[in-house]
Length: 194
Image 1 (tube, rainbow, N blue to C red):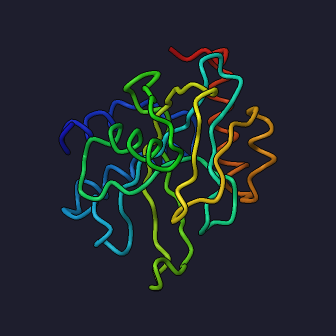
Image 2: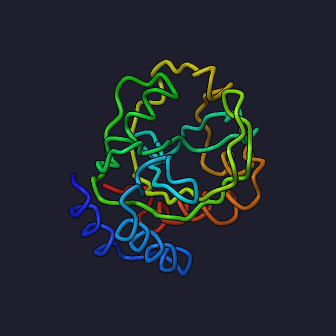
């Protein structure tokens, strides 16, 4: 998917709530106004992609214990120049969890959000606070498949019941505004999004 196809997909995306409605326009403006929107070289904001990974019957969610955020969280990463964000999300899931087979439930955007990232140290260097303008995809994997940590990014990988995933995260804003929203979106479709 190229930049213009992604812009078209975001424009067609039906916002789930006020947060998504406002963030949708922020993402669109940023992508259209910034040639380096998909690069970490843009120190103010850059595009990221995330997978909300569920098992086949939607009874479990895959999460990682993120080293920088010191919390259980969803799986994703930087676009690093790529505009095919579904491919980015799937690659990040495989790299960060050790899962070999992951597939999209749908190729459509599942969620979008603007996420604040506090300043932190990564690989010995200070990274200033910035925004991750994020696209989330609903992905499916086998909860029986062996998982493994990626030591430079996380120190745990586990499947949780959806409600348990909310309790495991120590990031209150993510729990209240993002993870709960993702579960609500699954509930709206009977946790059987296909």
